[in-house]
Length: 447
Image 1 (cartoon, rainbow, N blue to C red):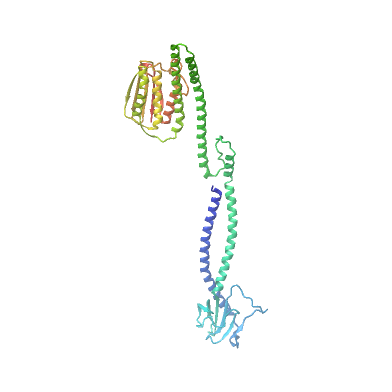
Image 2: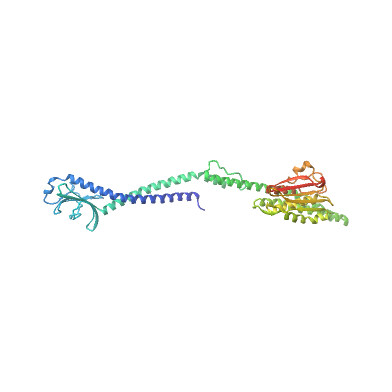
């Protein structure tokens, strides 16, 4: 796994090396150009100083004068500027430095700068003549000496740069480690955490660049905590709600087995079947509740609400026919943005609630229409026993059962699912009196 520290450090060092190499190359090039002018100036200065220092009797010397150190050593300097002194006509050499050749640097004896070749080696020279036009001084240096000195300068520069680069590397490493120390502490804290510890990560003192990441992680931890709480609550609720129908199933099964008469056995079996159906419906609603957590993460899509409502009503026609109930369906074309599975659960629970609590021979009316400002409205009304108005705000709470209806016992989940799905779709749920002032009317408004 790549290390952020290592990548950051190597990235900084690479950028430093590239920039330093570019600068050093440019500086060396400029120095090479500058040194040409500097050496020409030196040649000019040496010639002028030597000209002003010549004794008048030099022209009377019988042979060339060699300049040697007083101690007799022949020490050579790293960079040598050599000179020759000739008579103006070039017939006689009057003096020369130890490293100067015996022949003229330039046999043309012209004043000024010139590039010449001495013993097969290139030289740069400068020639100057005295005011009496009697002698000429030729000053020169081998280009090999100039290049050697320039290479020595480059080598010294590279050594100094290497030392500086080492110091910068250590400094950058210290700065990177110090800057990311808080991140290391955060990593250690996460590794030492309990797997179920979803407390938010601390963000005080963290670099500004890491704040958005920490905020995002904390939001994710919050969502995970919410999901885990929902799962725990769902398991607890499911265990609590399934305990009663399972106990009833056991009781009626034992009664049916112990019955000696066919009539008693049939009654026990009918009750057993009713409890089994109730347990099946309760299981379906609990599963629908669990599915809503996944539905929340799905993107919204256009849903033909009128068609979905028509399908939902048809699914309950058989149950309504068995109770001789009359269902009136009034739908108008309308579309909402949402999840088709969630809206299907909403319609199914509204119809189940109406069919379950409407007595035999009762009426159920289902209306679906678009809203002028967009969205749609869905209402399901019946003429059953209804719910006291004081309890309307509470019937959408999970596992709440309205009082006064002992004949039909629900799970208390259906209308809570309706309210939850409506909220997920930016809508709301309202209660009102049902048909003819009796029963209950549930209206869902969706954006």
